[in-house]
Length: 535
Image 1 (tube, helix red, strand yellow):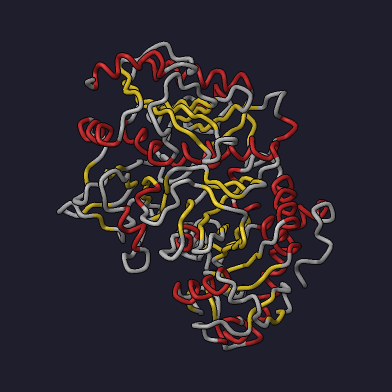
Image 2 (tube, helix red, strand yellow; image 1 turned 90 degrees about the horizontal axis):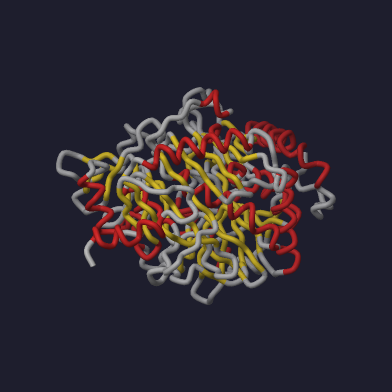
């Protein structure tokens, strides 16, 4: 069956449930090679010397957080965490936006993909993407879970109408700019317009899963996950830049996934079938699995620069520091093909503390785990973003993923506490940031030391270790870890000026306390009977 015949036969079914009656042409569920071929023919991207499809996303090289909206609908409004993260869009505004997007798509060449989100069959949803670009269809095909066979009569649970080239008139629709990412949980419809950045597609479905699963008693999580040689599952929470993808891609462990998972009574499952790795300054010796995946046919490289010979330059951030590689999970040699793992034996919460205060590794009580989960702390480094001053800037993102959490953080916190209280799970706080002083004074903790600490934690080597409690956060620090100098384990010993360390630690404690004040009324309900931070 040739491509044109397949396209014609699939045209009606491909648009079922979308509200679209037709298009100039429809390419339904094309596989990797024809999608790459069409992307090149249409001028959407270039091939690197290694065969990856290299694309640029124009003005939007990251998420447009202030342009994301949830429709205010009677069936769902009481359960949504409204505010700056989840902005309201009226039903009338959404209807007008959806109509404008449908009118735009009607005259285009369209690409559709029918895919799953959720590796556990009892919790997965069926997703249909309709987009105007072959490379965005390939992105979705890489990122989500492909049905094992051609799905006949695929009935989507959620529809994504994706019009990256359409700029809407914001004032008439109740928007703030010509860009819109709008979700209707009642209509099970997502509309994206005015941005080429493909991460919006991925994170929109993550938001949907974060809405659906808590009602089933399942905890959705912004984390990576892997499995050890003896079948032990580990989770890695962390914001961008903390090492979530890097540290979970361990050649000695099997990768379940690098970003989005859920924790149920039976264990952990991945939402996705691919990875979306940040690749700026990627090194083959430090991250060989990700490096290899970024240099092969079928991978989509966003905003990566090619040299004159077509070779990728992963050090070039002239387009953006947020360069990305999108590839299917099976491009990682030691990936777990089922996307499923057992009940977590270890949970790791990552922070890149540019203040130089947090220990490289510490063990948390359940109460401390809840405190740091709701805090979601890391620190942005001065000089890396426009407008930042000379000092590091503390960043708090509840549940390590507030932009994608439609429900109040306490909902996810209660689920986490429930699982931690019923299952024997160790929780560790790992600092991948600075030691011996803040950014500009101290040094970045080496990845070799971080890997040694994680290996000791995940293998159980720290089960009988001796710990001491530091005075500011009440964190328990191991006295000795094989392969790591003792003075690195304790930040107070790593700083040459003890008084400067004390002042910095007290400053960071105050920032934590100011941020956590909004959760004070929920602390007792969440089982936080102990004071998690000591002033």
